[in-house]
Image (cartoon, rainbow, N blue to C red; front, side, top):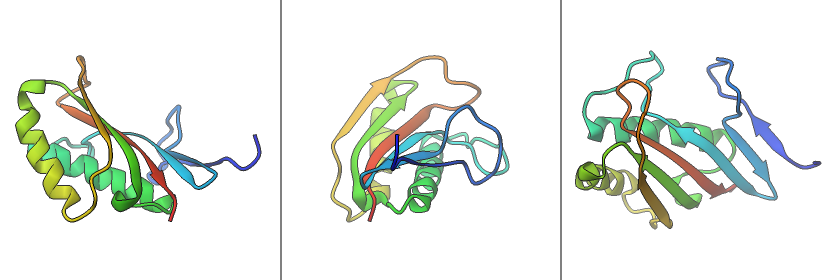
Length: 125
């Protein structure tokens, strides 16, 4: 289909999906996990939330979007009992940005020590 722009991950590691797809000024970001550039995963959920946001902001920026242009965000948590800790870090990270609609669900079987994943739909700026 003409007009779709797909961007690969900047680290060049082969994956069976692109980092983002853009069409008609809308950006779909793939799920971002709390893996740092060095391959490590922080221990605390708060730190994992921040790494996920770092990764999300990076792929959105590459596609011409940012946190304030997110139209919808979906969050996958390993344990909804950790919702308050996650939500505090989430709200802190959005700061003064208008909060987008959000869905948060509990999922099982994350790989390794990961406890959170986020994907987003945003408007290209």
